[in-house]
Image (cartoon, rainbow, N blue to C red; front, side):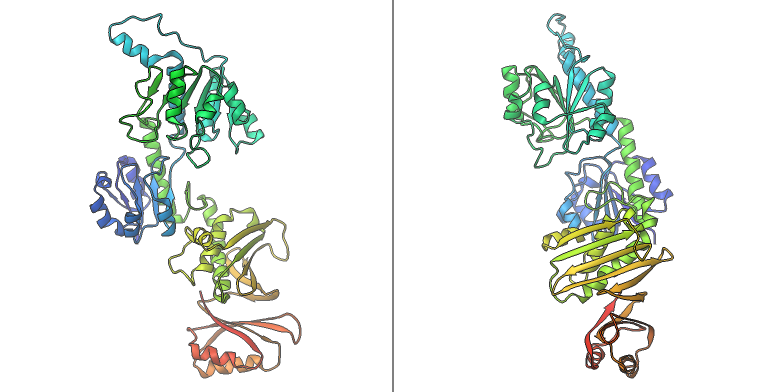
Length: 527
């Protein structure tokens, strides 16, 4: 059955056609996002939801979306999506951060030029019949220093354009490496140095607890007198009241904002200042950008629903279309290992260590870690999946560690899962033929077992007669054995047995197995 997607905001017909061409059933209702009740009524019928900014994916809507697997936002901002609620329900939230990067960067450059030459003010004056040629004395950009707060995708494009204008570009970004800065032609500096040196400051960073009011009264006081400030990123990065005071005092020569703390910004403390320029969040408002993000979100949603590829997800690791087929067999192995050890745990988990060795260590393992956690936690929570499993683990104070060893050991590729609960338990698995999951070690004991739907795991003392007694108990109960896998630490010491059977084993039969002399543990497993 083809997956179904609802498009509840305006998207181009070309974007909608992408869904159809990919084999996804799509319902296009571009005005539905504003009809909260109708949307709430039908959202349960869909696997995917494609939106812009009009649709509000609230906790209430997400709770009603019983079949929803992915929400795709055509654009960068996801303020209209309750990401924590989506994560708890295991729904992937995607955006399209690169489709409007050029458009936003160009808008920042346009705002900088408008500030430098007072273009909006001169336009109003001229059209009012005045000819105030001597009033509007601007400044050149040539040779000036542009300070970028945030040097990611958009910031780097702004840097490139500014360098073309023969400006000197300095940048503050904790994530900017010296090598990347050199490649971009940016001098990497600390924030205080940027504030002291920049003639123009342009912000290109997300709004987080760390960046909120990054330009507050104290920071503005450290800036060079006559600085001009541009914000086309996020409202809240600049303390608007403090900036108004700095504009009134003349310390800041001008500011140009495309974004505000409260939007729509019908009134604002910065409005009506003669040296302030405002636009109504136009950063992404070009024909090309709107089309680009629409096409991208259609491709991304289709990729995930059809192939499992995850691109630009905000609440889980991304899996490229190229990586998805490589990871697919490992995903099954990861789920089986997590499920196996999770079914053995008899107390709450406190710590999980997932080790990747050999070929698998060269891949994108974060999705595999999420799937291991999904398998581990499913016994306790039926609603857990690879999207919300890391969040659930964090909420339950489970420490999760991921370790990689690219060197090969006894196997070309190996995954090992260790849990701390009532006791420390671990097991390892590999792929045979690069596609068939096999368990190859349990508790340090070598074994070679392919897991079936119904398994019985037994630990026992290595003594003669055990296998015969176990077969008799199962046979007397009418349970047919499909495969039998054995391992032991040494002669007469600890031994393990994995038995695949054709049907689930009743509890009373499991109890009889436990009564066999030498049996220490007997646990039925389902995969």
